[in-house]
Image 1 (cartoon, rainbow, N blue to C red):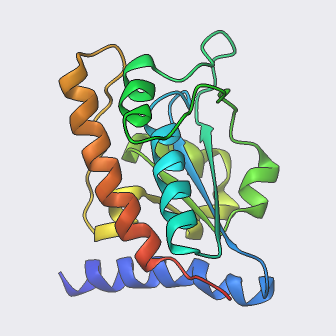
Image 2 (image 1 turned 90 degrees about the vertical axis):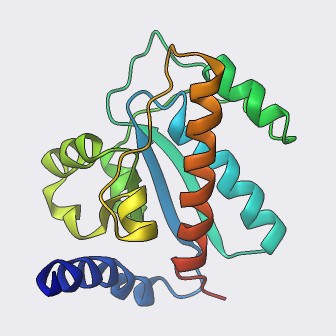
Length: 177
């Protein structure tokens, strides 16, 4: 248990050390899911709302680990639930995670362990700054449920999960002034 805790603490602190080199710049967080149409879009929208409300010096983007150029619009159920909170994601277009995104991001937070593995496989040099969102927020290894193609109740559950992890992530992430 001590080794696991030490590994999590070390892996969470390593990316933060690189932030000193970016004095004056916001902490940059990329949220990644499969197609950048559901979970990551939700995380970006919720994070941007909280960042604006709390006036945090943090910038966020969302990207796809497996970009599909034929499926680029936000999932309708996620968009509906976010709109109920006053968050309009209708203009969002899915985008793939690029080497430039990885280079400029201080943290890359994936929605599942499978996404994390895929991103580390593609960008092994960035391993120290890649976590699942649950792992970074809580230290627990847990996936965010994939609601794609499922009933509205599944989207409600997914947004609740993402909302919790985003709030904890923004509390934990460095907020340079």
